[in-house]
Image (cartoon, one colour):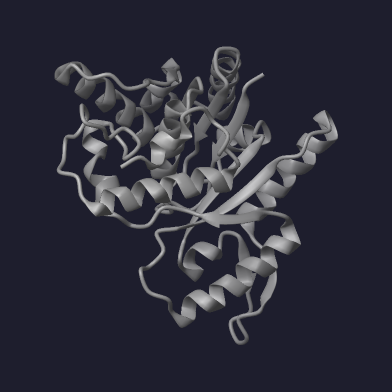
Length: 275
């Protein structure tokens, strides 16, 4: 069976799709066979990215690895108008099909609590949750006292993951690994970050997640999206933008992210950090 990676957070704007795209492409360059399912049925950011990728590669006579895709990622708008039962049935069929054809199934989820998103979380072997460097994003994970800023309890999304982990452990006797990534960190240290760090550490001990580095807010990540490319794709034959030292730093950043997720042993992983 394929290993299932779910990129999730019930708050929009945390960088889920950007992370999902980069994790998928890094795994592909590592030699893995990767299937992708985009469950953000209306937005379909990941689906658009890989459609752009296929078109750009064909137009430029270039080659780069592509994932296994399913029709659920190209019929999202119509499916979004269906009821929960229809969406769940379509997801279960799609999941069964791609999980038999890949080493990894990577699922990008919407920034909302939906039936299809909860079903995906329950199938995860690894849940990756990005959060921006802000108490606004932390509020989806934990609640702090407004006077002392001390952690008082876990919040909505933590409850969702907790329920999925409990279900998986009860039914299949398997543990779901959960990693919270500090995404889009500001370039300078701040008092707010120190406060946030302390609360994240406290919450991680309470609900059981690991903390890892995400991706900084770099222009290159946005600049390559229209081409369907990532920094892992850049090479002497694939170079739609001028290279700089910032791109080398971004590759190292992606490599650190993959290591934090536990994927450092993939074939040709050094290519991700190559200059």
